Each structure stands twice: as structure tokens, then as C-alpha cells.
Image (cartoon, rainbow, N blue to C red; front, side, top):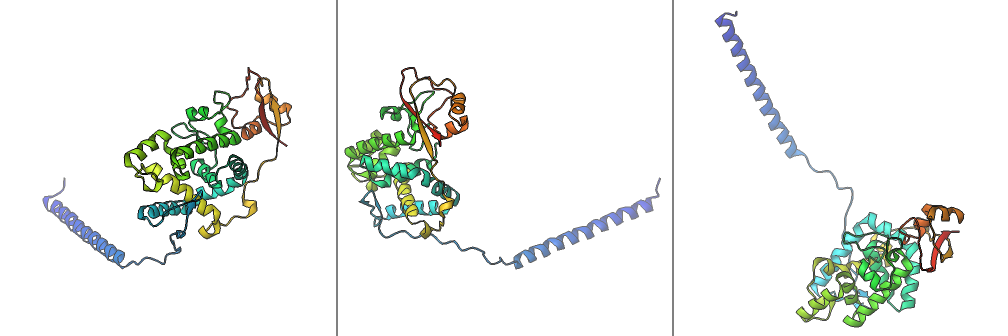
Amino acid sequence: MKQPASIALVVLNIVLLSFILASNIGSTDANAANNADDVKPGPVSIKILPVKLPKYVDFAGEVVPLDIFDVRERLDREMQVNAFWHSNSLAMFKLKNRSFPLIERILKEEGLPEDFKYLALAESGLKNVISPSKAAGVWQFLEGTGSNFGLEINEEVDERFHLEKATRAACTYLKTTKAEFGSWALAAAAYNMGNNGLRKIMEGQKMTSYFDLYLNEETSRYVFRIIALKEIFNSPKQYGFYLESEDLYDAIPTRTVVVDTAVNDLATFAIEQGTNYKMVKLLNPWLRSNKLTNAIGKKYAIELPK
């Protein structure tokens, strides 16, 4: 057992040591704070400038009134978003080389302005995607709308994923809405929000121009996104996109086989045709099953690699 004097000496040493440590920590913290105040930021390695709006813009031949402040700012927003969303825009640049020629040809045949190819770009990025609301394909048709405009949609066949047929259905839809609402901009807005919704808004606000309507966030931005994509894709270098021809995805050479009977197994069918199941599905995304029952003897054109 230690003597009381020894114990007192030990306690005193502990107290002194604690005081010294606390003083050093405080001094260190103060020096760190002072040093932090002295640190100056280094030079910025990049310079980010906003893209400039063109002085004149039209959509499908209809002038966009940039003299209206909110119209100008809404377009400005979409121009900045799409010009600086590099990964997404580059992916679309690569895909357009494969899809635009077919879409442009059909738009011309159907009598629609070529600008509507950018609606498909805005809807899906030219990919066969399915939205949270179950809209599908490049043109993003809902099942009911697609069926109403002549697309076959069932468990085995979904022509919303057939680019040519879906493009023609979209053309019919847009011509119908243009006839009702009187402008291509309103036809595009109706494509986004539906005819009934747009009709009610126009009647309630007593306006007949898309650019004069107070709309929900999505539809308010929709036409401007199409216009922004048109501007960027028409003048890519002006917005910083430099792509060589070898950067783009080429059209895939195919041959067509017409079937009017059942295909019980697509894998077997593919092998018999000198290819494989993967290629059949990639070239014919409208085939949604591993078979094609075809009970009524309908003719289906199946694309196969040359």
C-alpha cells in the first residue's frame, strides 16, 4: 500500500500533464485555424460559359416568340441542360445515324415536318425504353393509344417497338392533333399530355398558342426540349460536339424473311436462318416472346443479319 505523500505526488503529476496536453491541443487548433484562413484557392483549370441562344428559332416552320421573357428563359434552360449533359447527348448523336434516315423518310411520306424526328429524340433518346407509366418504344406509346392507332400489342408482339410501324402511327396521331388544335407546337404538346388535357387547358385559359399557355412542368418544358435538341443537333460544333463519321453507329445491313405460319421456337428458327436468337431479338425488338403463335396466318416481316 502506497504512502499518502506518494499518492498526492502522483495525483499532482497527472493534473499537470493534463493541463500541458490541453494547452498544446488548443494551440494546435488555433494554428490550424489560422493556417486555414491563409490558404488561397488555386487557379481554376476550366472555364464554363453558358451557350448562347440563337436570335431566331422556329419549330416545324412556326416562329418561337423569343421576345416573351418566359419563352426565352424556358428555351435557355433546355439549351443549357442538353448542351452540358454530355454523356446523354453523345449517346443520342451516335444513335441518330442509325434511326434518323428511316424516321425522316416516313415523316416525308406522311407529310409531316422533319422537326418531329426530334420529338422521338426527346421521348426516348431513340432507344426502345419503357417508362414508369408503361409507355414503350422510341415513340413512347401507351398501350391504349398504340392500339387505337393500329399497332398490334399482345404478349408475343408489341409493335410499339417496331420503328417503322410506330413512326407511322405517331405521324397519324400528330396529323390528327394538328387538325384539331391548329399548330404543330400544340400537336407536340398534345402528344405529351393528351388531347383531352390540352383541350381543357386551352378552353379554361382562352388561349390558342402553346407559348401563351400556363402548363404543368413537364409539358411546359416539352416543346422547348425538342427545339433545343433541334438547335444542338443541327449545329453540333457550335455547342462543343465534335464527332467523326467513325464515332457514329452505322445502320445494320439486314435481309427480310416473311413468315405467315407459327414459329414455335425463335432460337431454332434463328439457327435455321444462319444466325442466333440474340440477333433476332436485337433486330426485331417487337418480338416480345420466344415464339410467334400466329394463329391467323398473318404475315410478319422478320429482319435478319445479312
